[in-house]
Image (cartoon, rainbow, N blue to C red; front, side, top):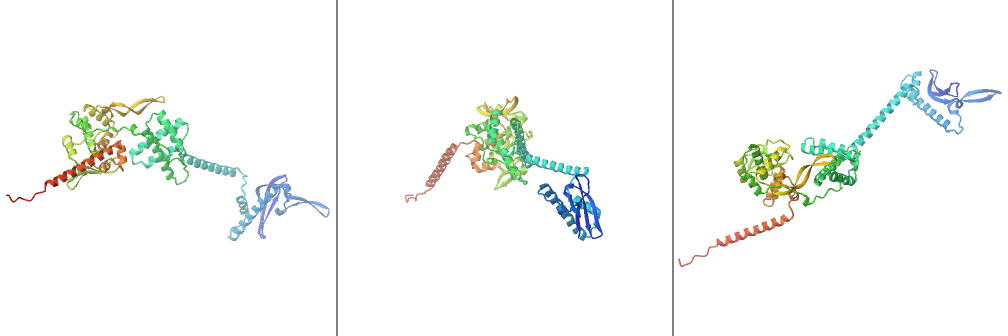
Length: 481
């Protein structure tokens, strides 16, 4: 049976132990170990036949004087003994040669003592790598919980949607400015009611942004955090309890200004002679846009190949550029009149709309659309020592406030109450009538007027039908003739 003995062979008070493995006559190996011990543990003085001698103790005979140090040392050596004997049984039974190198390796595998520069370096490198990995993990968790990281995830979501992508890029830059002012990075968990209040105050009072603009930014911030949280497969992103319930600015109806062209003004534009070719194209855009409710970017789709026919009525059918929604534009007599008179716009203005909006304003100015009204217009302000452009509500001549956005609002406003709202919504993309009315800033009182007009018209037509029926009654012929 294999046995293990520990030997203290040094002359100093502390030194390294040797270990001896014996098994039958063939195996008797002794190797030095890196284990430090004390000489006093291993030797005792005995007297036999009146002669005193020093005896080396076995591991089981180590003194037990109540000291925790000796007990712990003995327990560790007994565990090493158990491990080596267990490895011996396994390897010996499996035909592994038991040699002095085997014993040396068995000792090294079952001890963690760093007794060489190489071992120390290996452990230090391992600890350094673990620390670096832990730091990277902590950094990853911290970065994942930043608001700017959440917003950047929306860049990926909307990579194929340039319009939405640009909006989130603006939001990201705005948050960077806000963080600079606050001198701290905003975390996803910070985005709650307190954040909303502080952000609104900064954006409105310090940066002079409009309330509607601030609301749109807060909505994108909120959407970014929710999207990041919902797609967190590592379960490391934290959010505020008030994220889904924090308050936005309440926009009063009196604060909302919608600029439209009514049909008297559209007729003025129609009758105004424009000789400049570029301005003529802008004039066409106004007239066609106000009649179709299309964005300027979709006017190039009013072509023959997109014309369909149902029961003899022609209409255009195509997907819009901005929302990829399918729209159907009925080719009415009014549209045919405009096309016959002017043709369709060339639609070769740059996509940013700057030149188009400039020319639209000029056409309206020539057409004497010059009523003085309140409206929002870009203005250079000095904010925090820097020149910034902000939309400011002031009184202007109306032609200065007309933009390409006026087209759709004018279409919806002019036809609201005159044709089914579902037909208007099919073009503007609003899912409910309330949304449509908010878009054109239509007051509730309008429904009263619509109700009266439609009810009166219904009874007027019913009355006419009744009278017509009476007129068709023929009396019996007289016998006088």
